[in-house]
Image (cartoon, rainbow, N blue to C red; front, top):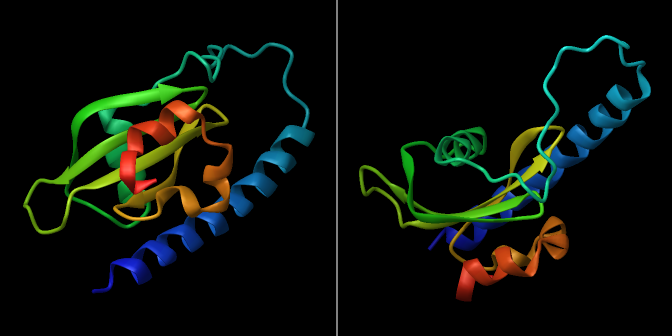
Length: 136
């Protein structure tokens, strides 16, 4: 009964946090980078794929805990989608979408309905949208 409201809340939170991250990334990009950085280079977005752990962390950051990946992870161009299942069976399984930004995977959306309706999902690759099937 509350699923549509829950999905809207999740999308609103994801968009709000994306705006904050965007401003923080812009500020960080403007600061000088040391010439002698020993950090390993990040994989290019086209080669990167999120792990099951990245999905669990992403959902937890969105306020949903107790989930595990249930099936294969689909990745394309710095985006990843996976079917998630609650380990205690307390909620419906859901689809979760992550996006790679600044070398970290961030939650874009999750749920069971209208997952492609969010503004950030408009730029998601076709392969990721196809993985969501009728939930997109």
